Length: 176
Length: 176
DNA sequence: AAGCGCATGTAAAGGGTTACATGATTGC
DNA sequence: GCAATCATGTAACCCTTTACATGCGCTT
Picture (cartoon, protein in one colour):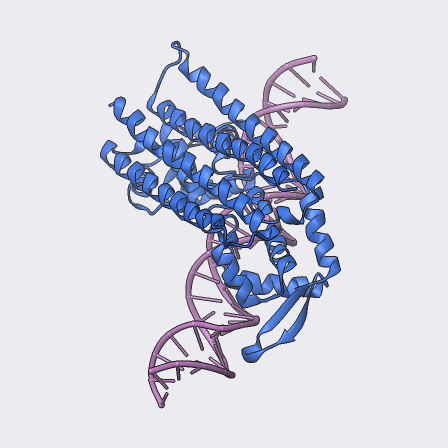
C-alpha cells in the first residue's frame, strides 16, 4: 500500500511523468521504499483509474504527464495523519547475525568488515547530500526541509549499524 | 530466499516441529524477518522435498519433527559464507518522513512523539533480553552468543531511530 | 545508419499475508 | 462437555521482481 502514497507524495510536489517518477524514486525514495519501473507504471494506471491522479499532457514517445487531483491530495494527507504506521522490518543483514555461530571465525570477520564498510558508505553518501542542503545558496522549500529530516534518519540509522558491525568484530574476536 | 535459511539456521541448533519453529520465529527472528505460519509450513515441505531437512518423528495431532540433513547444514553455511548480503531496506516510517511537509504541524508532532515511544519500547525490550543473558547463571552457548550480537544491533538501531524522532520534533518545531 | 537514452508497457514467477478449514488433545 | 491450545494445512489475493517487448527521438 505504501507505493501508491510514495507516488502521490511526489506528485503533490509537482507534476511528473512515469519516467520522471521512476528516476526520482531511484534517487530519493529508493532508500526507504524501493520500486521498479513496471511496478510504478502499473500503479500510476491504477491511481488514474481511481481519479487520484490525472494525465495533463502527452508528449513525444507516448510520454504521459500526471498531476495529483484534489481527491489524491486528500488521500495522501489522510494516510499521513490517520493510518497506522507499519513497523514491519526485514533485514537479511540482521537475520544472518542470528547464525554467526555457524560461520568460520575468519569468514565472520571478513563479513563484518564488509558490512561496516557498506554502512559507512551509506552514511557518507547521506552526509554529502546534507552538506549540499546546508549551503546558504540552497533554496529551502518545504519538501527539501522534509528531505533533510529523512536524510538525518538515514545517517543515524546507518551510523548505528556501522558502529554495531565494528563492535561485533571485537565482541566476536574476544570470545575465541 | 531468506526464509528458508532462517528455518535451516534454527534447525541447525536443534530439531523442532513446524509449530515450534513458528513460535521461535515469533519470539526471535520475527524482529529481523517476519514469517507467518502458512509460509513456514509451506517452506518446510519444500525443504523436505529437497532433502535439506527430514522428518524424524510424528507425534499427536499430525505433529512432525524435523531435523536438518548434512546437505541442509552445508546449504546454510554456504549461504552465510558465500552469498551476497541483500541490503534492501523498506520502511513505512521513513517513507512518511519524506512527506512531513504535507502534514499539519500538530499532527506531525503527535506522530513523532508516537514514533519515538514505539522505538524506545523496542530498545527497552531488547535491553531487558540482554540483561537476562548477562546474568552469570545463564549458560552461554554459541547460538546464545550470536543472539547477544543480534540484540545489540536491535538496541543500537532502534535507539538511533528514537533519537532521530526526538531530534525531528525539535527540528521541525524550530522552523515554524 | 547506428546506437544510446527516453518512455511505456505486459507476462510470468516468486514471496508474503489473510482468511478459511480441519481436527486432536488438554485442562477445567 | 466446553474452551483453549496444539498442529497443520489450502486458497485467494496482493505486492514485488525479472524478463521480455516495443518503438520514438536525438546525436554522431
